[in-house]
Image (cartoon, rainbow, N blue to C red; front, side, top):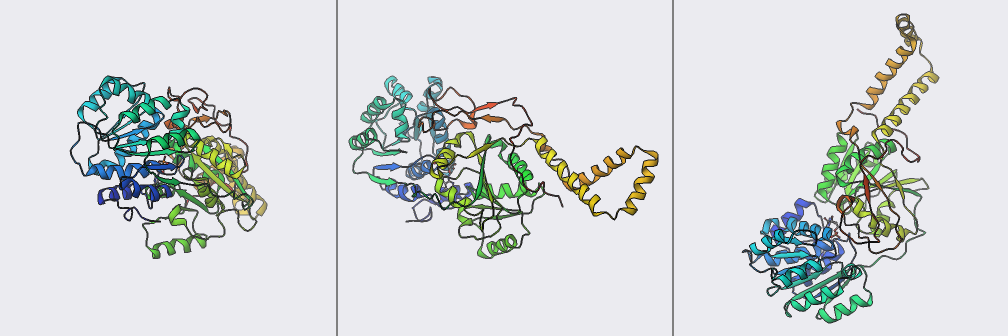
Length: 504
Ligand code: AMP
């Protein structure tokens, strides 16, 4: 299998873009799909969300189109997706990857005025990404011409069928030129999908991104908790969770190198001893980091999966998934780094609302529910820190040897309330231990309520960005709702670690 984007035949502009995004190596679906798509073959891919399948079809198509620099009047690529949110998301991905190649993309979906979409279509675009209903409407009105379409991608085809788009799909496919290339991606391949593939794909390359075998029984002793929050609040939330958990050594996984660096900087600013590991480092740099981590002079080791491969450290107390891993197997592999040698480990996963479906995939592989905890509030963190300070004072009382200090306390108490004297002394100790208040500590992180819809319901692809209520997907789906004024300070009871990190 080809192990780098360059080996897959991507050009320098795209390689540059991927490096800046921090993608270190292709995911399995990318390794397998990019070459046949380049070659112009039809493709039938069974792969779920989170496997990197968007890039798997976007990258080769962008590169092919990049050769025709001028924007054509008629679009050359049509991507069909089940929902408005996915149309936007896939458009953003094409836009991001295709920046250096001048690729123009337009999402078209129901709910938005025709007028805006018409203007964009009239101007001319390379790629149209749309929901089947709205695409068909445009075709019928004569505002979208399919006669120059050379590639059609059906993304999440099973979902499009579930949403009742079967007839629309047939009409669109019949209306596109016969000699086009077609790629169909679907998380499942029920007979209805197989029959669409049979009729509309010609000798397709078949790709199956399989689930690993059931790995149950090999699980280490790990307490697993997930926190759900909008992406914009992830770093602040992680800071609070770490303050409460006080890991001896946490291994924090990020999807990309860019995230690793960003997180390292922010957490260092929070007073942690942080080291980063990513694929862009030399072997000597990596060895240095590993030595530090083994020598217990590191609190947090932040890494991509690729960089963390093969690292072996005994005393990882916490594994943190800054993103929900792209596959349940990757999750298992990551959390296997903690809970070794009979010690209890902790696995913490930060999930965006739209990633909840990935959490459910993990639950079903592990055959066990994941505990969802409330993101700690600033008050939770402060309460924990106060408890730590109080414990320190108690320890000093027990240790005794306070004669000199008793004399100072006595003289101060002659002119002040003795309770005030003690409180002021504790305050000084507390501030020295906890450090300055972070401006961000008071930020309110909206609470996201889980709706436990019928389990195993495939309708919820969790595509609403940020989990806000939207008019998008149809009935019967699980909803994520952000409660803007959620009550603060009632964090679920759960064991906590040793206490907040001391600064300096
Ligand atoms: P998708 O399955 O297309 O929804 O992609 C899931 C996530 O993985 C997206 O956030 C992508 O930006 C990210 N991603 C895709 N390919 C890679 C890669 N090769 N390395 C790191 N992250 C990736």
